Image (cartoon, rainbow, N blue to C red; front, side, top):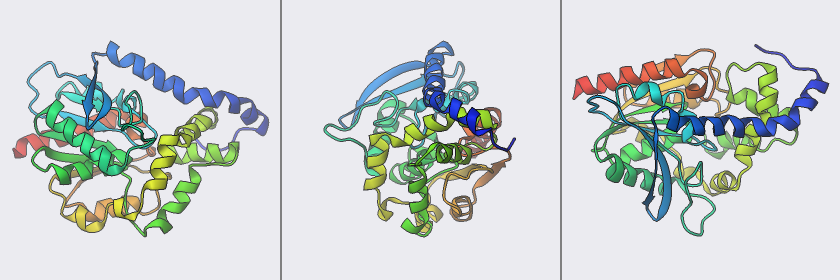
Length: 306
């Protein structure tokens, strides 16, 4: 559905929109224990990390680690993880500074390298066996880094609208960074439209300020300011990725810089690719059934290869 609401309606909904995203995420976090998720905290790399485990009720040889994106948290997987847990032990982690996890001592953010180190410690000390690693947005970027660091512990990576593509360096990413700090309500609604692939105007208006506030937090702004081109993924490292890869993409993603999909599709080594129509940057929220089916098929292929 496309189009715009009358200005008076958008102005009425605008104050409410700051509350909608926290409300939805709060309900999802409240729901996770009710669907069988156990919550834990663990000190990793001198940082307190919060995570959930949904154990499979039968033999589950391949665990699954879910990694969320920039500004998000573990609850983004609340619709997908229970479906995957029918066949696999699933682990949902709050990255440092997000959700209920802490930050490195005395730091307002964690770098890509620090987050990768924490994920490596989590994979080694908490999951303690080779896993399928799934990441959305920044989580896909981290999944690649984790596979490079610990190839013996990463059986496969499934990247969902991954970020971190070097493309043309800062020239590609500067407009994206600018879009995260909209100057007014109209621009905030445009950011929501770019994130979500199929969202009616009333829901776009109700989510706009909440989405904006996610990216206005200090942990996000400091991370973006501190990240330079050396942190991004280049073509050569994707081509030599030491793990079986799959790429799942929401076809209506207008959030990431143009060319991101082609960057991963053309440089990952023989990836399994699925493009979901009428879906944007967050397939796990917009199309959870399709995402869960793709995950389970990919995991089954990994098991058959082993």
